[in-house]
Amino acid sequence: MNKFFKKIKLAVNKMMPFALIILFFLIVLELTLHPKDHTIKFIFEFLDAVVIELFVIDLIYSYIGSKDIRFFFKNYWLDIIAVLPFGLIFRFAESFFLIGIEAERMLIGQKMLHEVTQSEKMLKFVSELSKEVRLLRFIPRTIDWVKNTNLYSKLHDYFYYNETRYETSGKYNYKK
Image 1 (cartoon, rainbow, N blue to C red):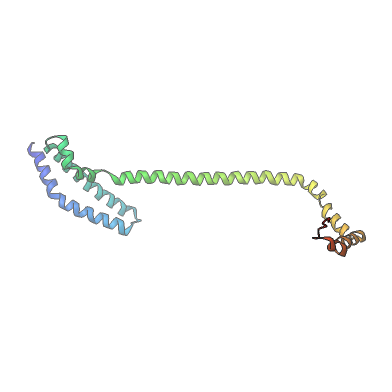
Image 2: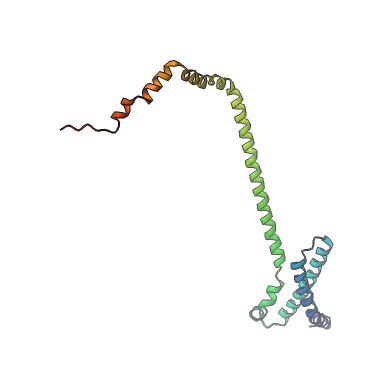
């Protein structure tokens, strides 16, 4: 390895403890503050990217210094996991989730629009049938008229208040 790359490796190794401390405070602040200001979010994301860049550079030098790829994955698996962009993966998953929510809202809106058009069709149908419906109003009026007649009250009294009807109900005639 030439002198330039050795100096970079030495500088990265000296910055690594500070990067870990910065990363710890970034995680704590993001979990507790939930910043709304875009400049603060940008600063958090920038510092996070710088720390991850340091991890990537350290991982590259670890790969160069390892014997083979099996040794590298066996001994540096935790560093590989630390470098993976989980934030990017979660943002990508969140985007799909938000797309799903918007699709559901559109589907609900489409269903509501369908219901409105169906109700408009029903209103048009009912308005066309309003003349026929008015003709059907004579049925309750006719029933009221029949109830007020003398014949109805006589028949009603005969069938509902006749004592002979109640005397025979419930009795059985057995032949001996």
